[in-house]
Every structure is written in C-alpha cells, then in structure tokens.
Amino acid sequence: MRNWTPKERQRQRELIIQHQPWTRSTGPKTAAGKQICSRNALKHGQRSARYLQSQNKLRQTFINLKSQIVNSNDCPDKVINELVELHYKSRDIGDLATALRVLDLLQSLYL
Image 1 (cartoon, rainbow, N blue to C red):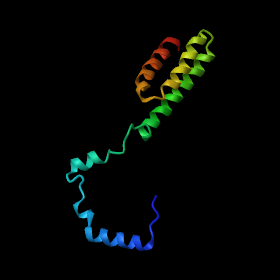
Image 2: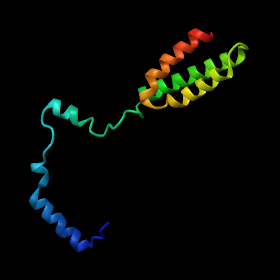
Image 3: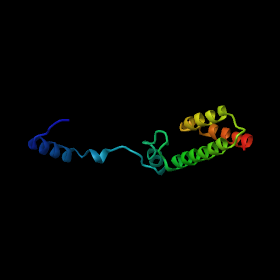
Image 4: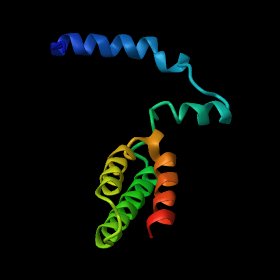
C-alpha cells in the first residue's frame, strides 16, 4: 500500500473534489437493477440462516437416527457406517436432498 505524504494527500483531495467522479457513477437505476445488484456478493448461500438451520436439523436427525439404530440389535454395522458417512457428505449443499431421501429410506427400513 502506498504511503501518501500530507502534501500528496491534500493535492489528491483537491483533484478529486474538482473532478467529482461520484456525479458520473454508474450503477443500478431501476428497482429491478438494484435488486439484482444486491445479490452480487452472494456466492453460494451456505452461510445463510436458512441453510445453516436446515443443516443443523438434518445433523440432529442423523444423530437421533444413529442412536436408535445403535440401540436396536438387528441393525448391521454396515448400515451404521453408511449413515455416519452420509452424515458427513450431507454437509455439501448438493447432497442435502439426497441425504434427506436416504434418511427417509433408512427410517422406514430399520425403525
């Protein structure tokens, strides 16, 4: 980063005030354009409250299901291992729908 001297800073300030670049700024003018631009910083949505809430709910459901399966004697270890693996894979947003379908299937088969 450049270190400005007070003299350089003052000169730059005067030039910017004279030039007034903010009067010719481009950007959204319509309501639709402003709405589109408001989402510019959104990259993936994986930090949104809605996504985190669904992940926490899914994680808790996996934990509950795992404890129920572990407590039942007729469930093989393979199923438990797959359940744990699926729990970790479900952290990716692309696997969320698949994880929910498999969770429903496991619940119907083993409980």
